[in-house]
Amino acid sequence: MANDLTRRWRYRMGVALITAIGSCSLPLHAMPLTINTEEYPPFNYSDDQGQIIGSATRLLRDALRQADIEANFRLLPWARAYTEARLRENHCVYSTTRTREREALFHWVGPLVVNEWAAFSLAERGLNIDSLSGLNAWQVGSFREDAVGDYVAASGINVLLAPSERENIARLKAGLLDVIVTGKATGEFMAHEQDIALAHLFTFYRAPLYLACHLNVSKTLLARLQAQLDTLQRDRQGESQ
Image (cartoon, helix red, strand yellow):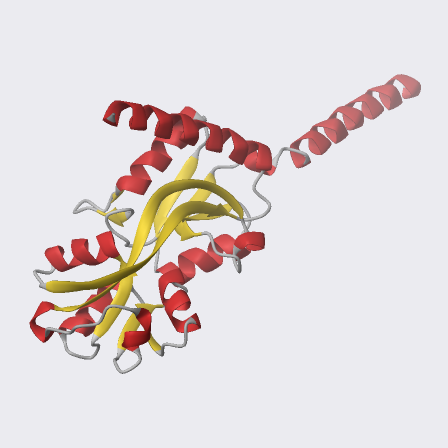
């Protein structure tokens, strides 16, 4: 009787141990991704109902759905969205410029869209500036952790940093800035939204925008997402021709 009880106890303990080991070894990519983004229209932003929309968002949601990958989207200030994707497991961020300094910090999927970097002033100012070197004499604004502002600052221009793109536009309107550097489509979208007449001074770079994911996110999972993204983009290009 004692031996029978011992055998049953050992069997149950063995089953429990195997179950525990199995659950601990579940791949991290079985968990939903947390995908952070910011207010950066027309690529990613919230509508009147608080839903995250935009051209990059639609493409990314479609690719995730077709790749059968579950994800939760969050709208945050850019510096936080970027930092959480860099430091927190299973987190990603978009729409992100893929720079040399950022390359090794993330796994990358994309490009989603292409962003033109441009300089703007208030139309009423009548400024005549046609290159980055011409910005030295002016108050130039960007926002924290933004690749556009980093690029301009690296060229020797003093750049004043706001917490967000919308605050940057407000500072320009209030006369606290002479020029802002941002994505061309974003500047035009926000100017229209706030009924501000902007002058496009010049465009100085074209930058593809990506989804950037924490290094713990499975490369196999992201390869599946990339494949679906590539297929969607080929299909859309074919439809537009």
